[in-house]
Image (cartoon, rainbow, N blue to C red; front, side):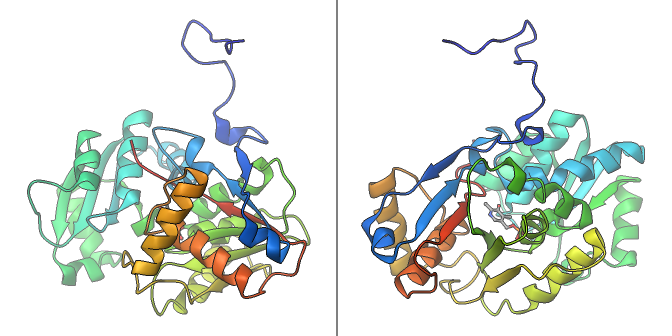
Length: 307
Ligand SMILES: *Cc1c(COP(=O)(O)O)cnc(C)c1O
């Protein structure tokens, strides 16, 4: 039977993020996992909102509320040229009626790459900061210069990670309609991990897989984000630093082979920057005996392809 739709084209229900049990979950069938007695569930957060896939929209949710409450009409944020965050802010701004300004690291290159072309097509004004100024982007002189150009605006940090982002991500665990022991996610800036850990039940743990090389500093970042959002860090998470495959947006033949094999077996195209490293890490850790038999891992597919 077809789903009921109302005259306005919606089903009359709140957005999926607000519904308990709103995230599709599938079980991976794979003899390598069976041998170790480990179950892996895929938490398909990438499917919840087709126009705004994945964790970036959770990170934005309460920032948009705050921007509106504070009377701002413009969102300004920062990102590298391949940033998913810039795309997400552009799409969310268009949907919710904000003007958006994206401050991009480095120089303009035309034609725009697919990430920046997507952001521009969704109404984002792009502006560029040289690498030196970009490094100081969160300091008052740089912010004052940006405000002088673009007017008063709600500033969202690079990657979207702040206390309000932690609050948004903390809603994901309760939306997973399945039992699990360890909730696993890729880690870029740490906001997602900070939030997921904050939303777990007692006894559950979170495991983040760093996608950057030399990312030990992320432990302090996640602690600090939790301190800002919750008052104190939680002690139910850890970060794996050994599965970055060469560093941010780098890849190796072994990672590429894993992603191709996973696609062939499970018909899911993992991305090489985040979710590919997450699943490759979970298989590697499983085969090394890092999880006791009977462990149920839930892997958050933070995003697959952008539309
Ligand atoms: C940004 C991003 C992450 C990392 O999230 P952080 O909160 O920055 O750690 C993971 N997966 C995908 C698909 C992303 O776009």
